[in-house]
Amino acid sequence: MMLFLAQSNHLGNAKNYLLHEVLRVAAQKANVSLAENAAEADVVLVVGNQLPNNAAFVGKKVYLVSEDAVMNAPEATLEKAQISATDYVVPESAVNFGGVSNVRNIVAVTACPTGVAHTFMSAEAIEAYAKKQGWNVKVETRGQVGAGNEITAEEVAAADLVFVAADIDVPLDKFKGKPMYRTSTGLALKKTAQEFDKAFKEAKIFEGGNAKTANAEESGEKKGIYKHLMTGVSHMLPLVVAGGLLIAISFMFGIEAFKDETIFHGLPKALMDIGGGAAFHLMIAVFASYVAFSIADRPGLAVGLIGGMLATTAGAGILGGIVAGFLAGYVVKGLNFAIRLPASLTSLKPILILPLLGSLIVGLAMIYVINPPVSQVMNALSEWLKSMGEVNAIVLGTLIGAMMCIDMGGPVNKAAYTFSVGMIASQVYTPMAAAMAAGMVPPIGMAIATWIARNKFTANQRDAGKASFVLGLCFISEGALPFVAADPIRVIVSSVIGGATAGAISMASDITLQAPHGGLFVIPFVSEPLRYLAAIAAGALVTGVIYALIKPKTTE
Image 1: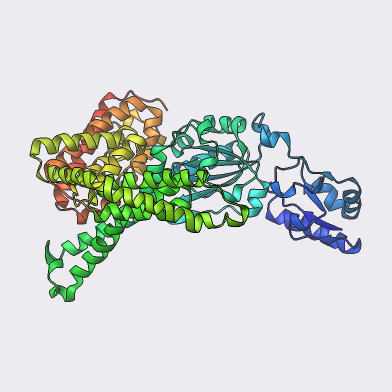
Image 2 (image 1 turned 120 degrees about the vertical axis):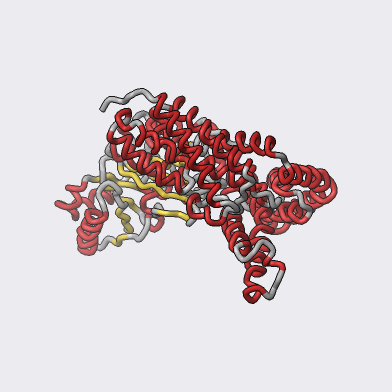
């Protein structure tokens, strides 16, 4: 007989190892073999008070035993396991959570479009709340540097709930067969208790495939266009950051130094070729490919890439990329649904049929139908932005600045940010400068308010102000969220006024910025660093002073 001892997540690594060694010695005496995994075992021995929800146990016989029984009478435990093991049945509490008490082991995944603020702040909120309830918890972050604090197969097997807080599509295949609940990073951060309450009631077994198949609709999260766009933006950002900074460094040798290959042995030209010729040339194609991926999974990737590149070469810019991404995604998804093949030929769909037909349909549509009018629209928009008068610049800067501060990283903020990033591809850099200046205002403004009206804030709020100031300098608008949660109307109103001020000053001063992120660290690369700092300072002071005046005093 082969027996497998299931890891018990609530016991810890040391106790699990000790139990395994005690059982191994007893198994040798009883001529029983210990399996390396559940798939090889005849009987699965589970230490604890209740059976976990584990897809690997389906079709196996299981025996539930206490820790003391294994430690004190391992031989008798083995004998009873062989006689009394019963067929595994998925626990009812694992499928339909009746309450908090049924959930002990939580694994979570967080991911936001930029892979910075919301990813890690929501992870902290989830971890803090779960630990406060006395649960075991592990949170995997999917940031710009990849997966952090990665969840292992053993931790997945022991999990009672998979809690996914993501604003973009992320791979979740390793959680197949587990109860899963999906929400946004914003809700996980601001309404953690509410989302866990919903998770216990609404979590459903994840059957694998694209992350979109989980229950985001039930969680109240807004999917569709916004989520697909943010998936594209998330993967495009590294190209924009790298390309923009390299172009800015090239300009430091002179605005037109890249045209002369004799300057510094052609270094300015090389930097421009890398940043503008490669990174910026790829950004729209990568954006479109991941929009298509979000809609149609992996089969949409190549078709979106081709459609996005056609938009780039035609000068259709970000608007062409958006159309190409959505067109590619839905065309491939439709083809995948419509084409039915025998099982022996099914493998040809993702590598031959879908890429070929999808690329043909999307490519011809882009060349003959979409690119000509969209290119004209983008050219007209670019020319208008480049030649706008001071009044129009102030109006646009005010609008971008206000939108950046309305929901601190939410859909309105991301709409303004995506527009500004998209204009970089059309060599229009003033909106990006205005967006970043405004985005830095709310957290810095909250810090200023805690300094001006110190007696109106608690000690914890004053400490939060210090952290908020640092986050603001890094262009992390979410640093103001603790203040928004405590006093939403006043904080948002004062932030919007300050952000609009910073955006208007930046646009009126015709300040340009090629990098879409970085805050204080990329200010040396803006066209007018001192004026830019003045715009940010003015906006932050406006926000800080207004909030200091209108905020009621908080008692300790």
